Image 1 (tube, rainbow over the protein chains, first blue to last red):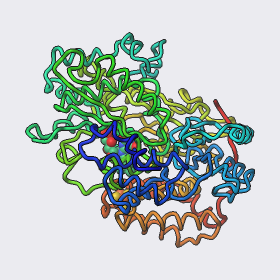
Image 2 (cartoon, rainbow over the protein chains, first blue to last red):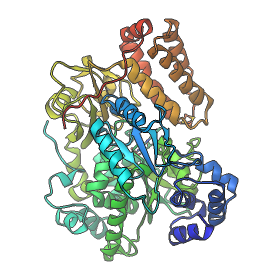
Image 3 (cartoon, each protein chain N blue to C red):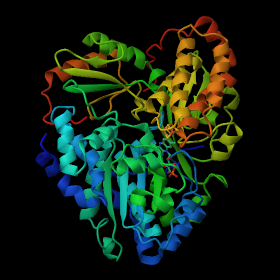
Image 4 (cartoon, each protein chain N blue to C red):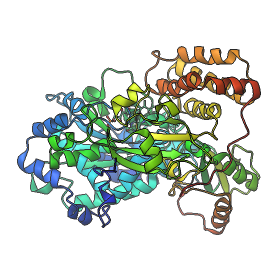
Length: 166
Length: 431
Ligand SMILES: Cc1cc2nc3c(=O)[nH]c(=O)nc-3n(C[C@H](O)[C@H](O)[C@H](O)COP(=O)(O)O)c2cc1C
Ligand code: SF4
C-alpha cells in the first residue's frame, strides 16, 4: 500500500493523539488490509506516513500476533486452543480442520492461497467453546466438526472481501 | 443468591441498550447529569472512594484510591484509559458490556474524567474484538451527536472526548503499562514501576487506567450514591461482580452476582447447571487462569475477594474455568504453560526462560517421557521466577501450575509414570 493511501486513513484521526507515533498501529492494521500481510514496501510506506524509520516500524509490527510479515491465505481461521476451549474439544476441532485442508496439525496455509489456519490464544468466547474466528469477524461457537465443514464450504463459496482485515 | 444487575442492565431492559435513546430511556446518563448539575469533581471522587469499588481487571485495587493518586497540579493533561484488552483466559465479561451496554461504559469514562479533571479518554480494545469495536464506534458517534461527548457536553462547561484504539493481538497489552506503551506506538512491553501511571502514564501524563467493568459501575455509583452501592456485598468486596464461567459446566456464561452472597457451589450447581451426568467437579481456576487452582475441598468458598484469598487463590478477573473429573490437570497445566510461554514479552530473562522451561518439562511429562525428578525440577524453575521480573504475567504463570503440582501431586506422579491420556475429546454439552 502507498504512503498516501495510509495517510488518507490516519490523517482524520491524527489530532486524537498527543504523539504521532500512536498512529503506527492504525496504520499497520490498515496497510495490511490490501494483501492480508505486510511486506517490506508496506512497512516503509507506514514509516513514511507516520514519520518513523522502517526498522522501527518493523520492530513494532513483529510484536503483535495479528500483524503478519509473511503471506497468509485469503481467509485466516484462528482456532482458540486455550484451556476453556481445550476442555470442550478444540484439539479435535483443530486437527479436523487442518486434516481436511491438508495442513500440518498445528496449522499453516493451503497451497491454493485460500486459507490459513492458526492456533489462537483465548478469544474471549469461552462460553461458546470450542470457538474460532475468521479474520476479524465475530468469533463463532460452539463449533461441531460438521459446523467446521460447513464453514469451509461457505468460505469457499464466498467472494474474497475487498479489504482483508486481520 | 439470585443474580443482580448493575453493569448488565441490558439484561433487564426490554429495548436495545446499544442504541442511545434506549439507554436514556433505561435511566442512562442520570449519573452524568447529576454530577454536572450538582457535584464538584471532588464530590465524584469521594463517592468512588466511599463506594469501595475495586478494580475488576484482576488486581482488585480500590478505584477511588487509585484516582486520588493523580497529582492535581500537573501541567500536563490528565487521561482516562479504559482497559478493554480482555485477554485473560476464561474471561469474557467485558465483551458483553461493550456489545450490549456500551453507553454505560462511555458514561463511566466521562464521569471518571470529570472526577480527575481530564478531558480525554481512550478505550484500548483487543484487536480480536472488532465486532465489539464496531458497536463502540457507533455508540461513540451517537454520543457525540446527542451531546453526551464533545465540547460543553450536556450544555455544561465540561469537555470530554473518547478515542477508541484497537490492539493487534498480544496478551501483555492488557498489563497496564504494556497497554500504555502499545497505545503510544511502541512494542507493548511493561514498564518499570514506579512511576505508576497515575503520575506518569500515557505520554508521561497523569493517567487513570481502569477495566471496562470497573468503569461501567461508575454511573450507578454516582446516580444511586456510594452508600447505596456499599450496602451490596461485603465490607471489603462491595457491589456486584460478573463471573464468566466456562469449561465443563452445563450452562457456561456470564453471571452477575452480589459479592459474598453466593458460594462457588451455588455458582457451579445452581446457576451454571452443574455437570454432565456421571461427572463431578474436580478443579477450577476462579480468577482467570493466572491464579492458584481450587479443588473440590474449596467449593463452599464464598465469592468475594477476601474469601478467595482465604481459600488460597484470588478472585482476579472472575473468569472461572471449570474442569470436571474427566479432565486432566497435568495437560491443563501444560496448556497454560504454553500460553504464558507464548505471551511472555521476553523483556525479563527469568520470565522468558522460566516459562519456556515450564512448558518443556510439562510437555515431557504429558508425553510419557517424564522422570520423577522433573517434578522437583518444575518446582525449582518456578521458584526462580517470582520477584525477579517487571510485571505480574510471570507470577500469573507460576500460580496455577505451582498450586496444581501441590494440590494434585498424585495426578502428576501418575502422569510421570504413564503419560497423560490422549487428547481431550469433543464434549458437546449444555447450550
Ligand atoms: C499479564 C497481565 C494481563 C492483564 N490483562 C488485563 C486485561 O486484559 N484487562 C484488564 O482490565 N486488566 C488486565 N490486567 C490488569 C491491569 O494491569 C490493571 O491492573 C487493570 O487494567 C487496572 O484496572 P482495574 O483497577 O479497574 O482492574 C492485566 C495484568 C497483567 C499482569
Ligand atoms: S515478567 Fe514476563 S511478560 Fe512481564 S515484562 Fe517481564 S518478560 Fe515481559
